[in-house]
Length: 564
Image 1 (tube, helix red, strand yellow):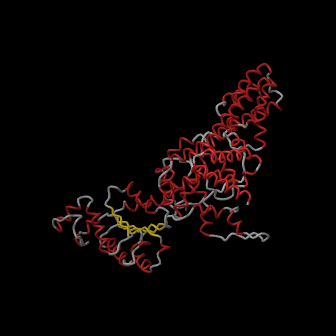
Image 2 (cartoon, one colour; image 1 turned 45 degrees about the vertical axis):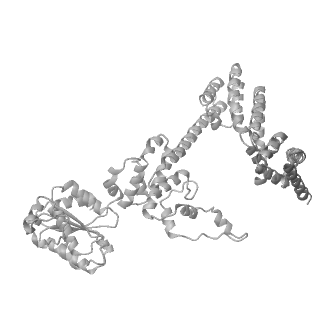
Image 3 (cartoon, one colour; image 1 turned 180 degrees about the vertical axis):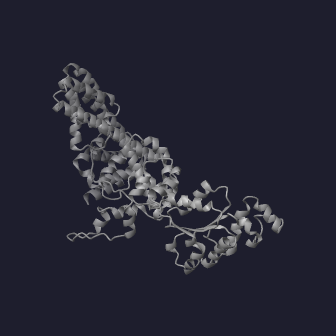
């Protein structure tokens, strides 16, 4: 016979509705939801009966248990009046209570259900045999039905065996399935409802405390459910991270997720740096605790616990209990954008593939479909495909629909200007980018003119201030490489350099740094270098007396540095 939680519940209902008193043990592993199951049963089926719940955690004396028990009982069904009649008028909750069970008659306890819990966490100051003695008294003398919630595997005390036969009439082993445990708390789940049960089953998580922590985390991210519902991959990435991080945190509150990620990474650079050249690779020392936690993580395609921006957001939430909605919104929006763009790229690919191989797909239909895709996405086409691919598709349109060449050209010019702006705003251009710029300029003379005008405007902007010129001087020294800096510096006017000398002494200092560094001696920088030297000489001759002296000393310093 298969014993389910429903089977146990039905039997308990039958016993607790009886007029007889029983001793009942509800035994099960820590965290499987025994207490939750019991409280739910009482709330749903026995809310009108007299009941008491006693947790032994933190209790140090038997008298505390008695006080707690009586205070719970007398607040139900007119018991307050009965106590007043027996002990006189007193403050019910402000008194130094030393109530005795003897104050109550046997009938006062008829059909009272008393549950004792947390036997495994009983205080060293409280003897288990005394607790069991009280339970025996309640059952045998007061005719209460007594329920013991415990984990017998964690209780080694011989007193339990001694009293068990006397106290316990029915012994239930509470061993719910994952589905049964989840069913107890699933109504608390407000978001991403289709995910947690499968995760719990896959990882054999049957601890109701962990389940509740995970559900709380999912609920705290309810704001994002509608945002990702149409993007399955993004939704799964978000929910999977919530499930994994919150589960690990529930298992190991003090875990350092960055250290865990580093441990799981077989390509860890720190490990490689310790490896001596020519020696065989050393096996990473196993950490059993980390290995256990990593079982709850889907390492996906990267092969280790990778912390993405979404993962980091959830780790931050675990630490602070507050969701950084703005950063997660940005992360999700970026993924949505990429997914949309990927879909558009696939549409274009299918379109061109059909044009090549589908004998029933006309070039007339091909040009209509292709242009429709490009035109409908013109506002963000530069983020979807690169400039060279765009040029190829325009050439395809012109080749197979010569009647509309001018339309395609006008459309392309507007888009290609955007590509030029993107490339020209970058500081450096690899050779392949320079070729792309050349291809764009060659498409039409209008684009060549646009390029020259934009470049002039951009260059003027990049040398328009003291700070920008300082950066152009110092960046090649800091980076030990350069791109357009020599060309831009060559366009700085001597009059502007002289003005900067008078304006800010830091510019003079940075100019000397530039002149004495080997970088400035390269031919590309000679024009700007000579302009600085001319300005120094000019001030040494035409400045006021103090200025002339300072610049002459600078020239002497440079002579020593450059000749030395």
